[in-house]
Amino acid sequence: MAEAKESPALGFIFHTDSVKDEISAIANTMQQFDTAINTGTVDPDKAIPELMEKLKSEGVYDKVLNEMQKQYDEFLKNKKS
Figure 1 (cartoon, one colour):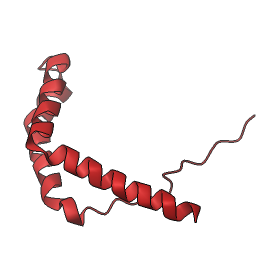
Figure 2 (tube, one colour):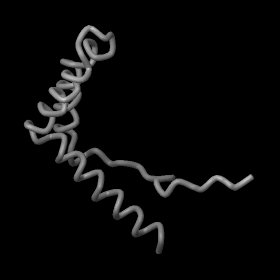
Figure 3 (cartoon, one colour):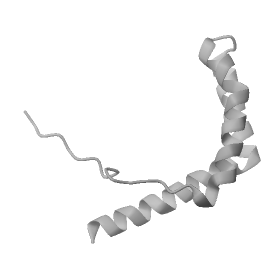
């Protein structure tokens, strides 16, 4: 049996201070969609792309994603050192 590989993300902690407002905006947008999607009262093939479009059009999704990637890249760089 092969040994499990350790995830490179093990130990990574995302610090949200610089994107706190954006995370709040994402949570608000998610609340508009989550009940309908989770209960199946809307077609997920339509609702999920609408949700993603709204998140991306607000600019907050990409800002949080970019900040997370920046921190993760820095984490990996420091982990190898």
